[in-house]
Image 1 (cartoon, rainbow, N blue to C red):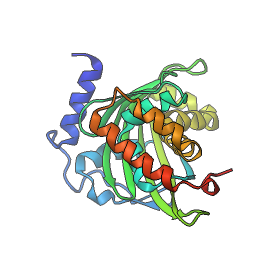
Image 2 (image 1 turned 90 degrees about the vertical axis):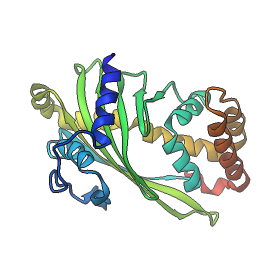
Image 3 (image 1 turned 45 degrees about the horizontal axis):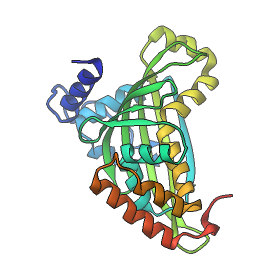
Image 4 (image 1 turned 120 degrees about the vertical axis):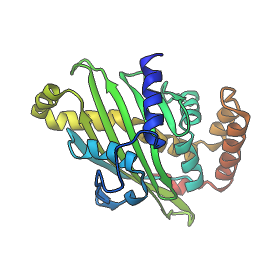
Amino acid sequence: MTRQGMQVVVFCLVLSGVAHGASTDECPLAFEHGHMKFPVDQLTSESRCLLADVIDHPGASGVIGPNRTPISVELYAYLLDHPAVSAMLMERMGMGSFQITPQGPNRYWVNDRDGAEGLLVLVFRDVHTRIYYIDGRHRSALFPTMRAKTAVFLRIMTEPAASGRSLVQTTLASYTRFEDGMLSRLLRLFQPLVTRAVNRTLTKEFSLTHRLGILIAEQPQRVLREAAGLSEATSDDRQSLLALLRTEAASSDPADIPQ
């Protein structure tokens, strides 16, 4: 079995509750992250332990947003919850080559083809919340290969737009723990630079989802044409996306697009 396959198996065991050792009282996790409250009491004890292991020993942390995306919350949620389909559409729209491969329910192997890759796991989802755990690595010319684990807390809200309809407001809080202790100490000397680079790299998918939403608002008919050609996506996924895009195109208003 490949290392990638082994990682997926381990995550499936841990997050499904097959792995034992964490009671409901273990691994306490704060409710507030980035001045936002999250329903961490609804997480499994295994998920809390994975996240707490990162949050209790962060090498980098930060908040991105609030970002305002001029599309419906239904379409935004679809793009967020179908990352492989979103990545295909981004590539067709000329937003880069971002490869996302499903590895089981709520698990995806992500490769931004720019030095970063890893396993993205959705550990919790509700109407206003997404909580993710990322186990990945990043290669760059500036620093040696960095292995890191990241906890991501995403808040999704709606607010009135200029046209009178609603747009999506998102704020993301992230924590990253570097796996190499010596490297972690070295990188503290470059804390501002490292923090910016890590947050930008490990949250790239979420930033691209925001950019794709703006592109949908700016060029709804072009996006519709490109989405219709997503032969790699399943028929159900493609039809669901097209239905949402048609509704969006019918109600789009240039006044809602941020300048």
